[in-house]
Each structure stands twice: as structure tokens, then as C-alpha cells.
Length: 67
Image 1 (cartoon, rainbow, N blue to C red):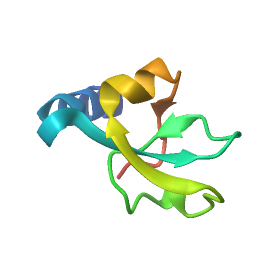
Image 2: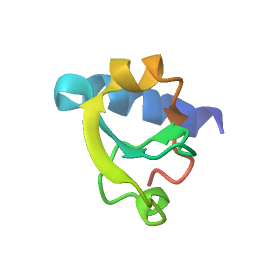
Image 3: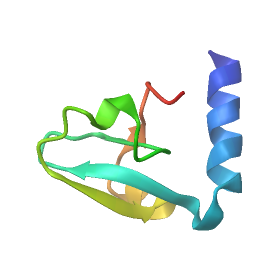
């Protein structure tokens, strides 16, 4: 588990402009590193591209499905 968290952290800091994806819905709680993440398949809201800092300011956490 620590290895996955470390890899996710490294990916976050090496991504261009730290862009992540969120489902803009009232019940969404996570952000995604990939717009094709399987965690976004059930998104009923709009898919938005935002910065990692903005996602964190919205109290989002990393999706557990990141491949």
C-alpha cells in the first residue's frame, strides 16, 4: 500500500502542470490522474480538468482505482 501511495505521489509531481480530473457532482470526493480512469465511469456530472492544488483545496483525495 505504501508503494502505491509513493508511486501516486511521484506521478502527481511529475505530471505536466499537475493537471487532474474530477467529476463535478455534489457526491464526488476524489480526483483522478487519468481522464480514462475507471473511477470516472459512474460520473453523472461534468468531467473537469483542474490543477492538483485546486483539487486538494476542494478536499478531494486520490482515486483508489488509479492504474
